[in-house]
Length: 193
Image 1: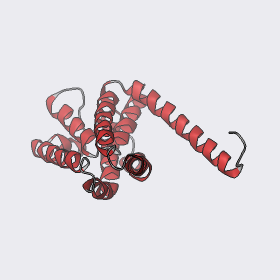
Image 2: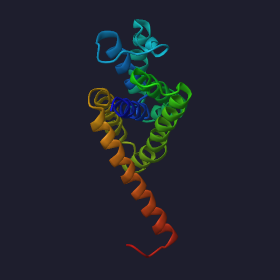
Image 3: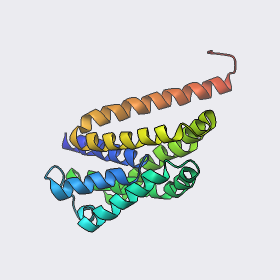
Image 4: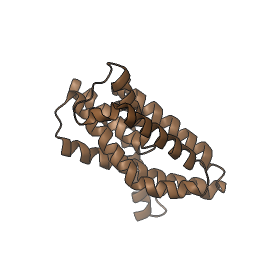
């Protein structure tokens, strides 16, 4: 059971890094530094170093501000195309290594793919659609919602990993159903409407 909860935590943290790179890393570091809820193994315990926590806090503030400014948010998303998957890889590996002995390279790859996938959906589909349909007016509320969601997922991933695991599975099934339906409709126009 511990393996499953650790993996659900890892998946949830890496998914939230796809929305905001620094929130899950900061939460992991703060919880390791100030509580016994999570005890990071080497080399991931570096996240709880006070200097690293300060840097993560500063980077979080910069990203949150940059993501709320209409023109800057597109540049921020371009930069975050590299940062968010790396943060997701670190978050997955750190969380998975707390209880399990998942090979670090495998953990890094899975975290990279999960965070990269979430970031791609955010920056490549959601944000351009919101910008186009609202003339940019919807970007700030969406950005705030992403930050709140990333924080909630990160905290729930550590405190209630089974809830996050269930939500991730339901979300993945929904996305697969939506994708399958879209592909089916494109290959057979006029049917199924």
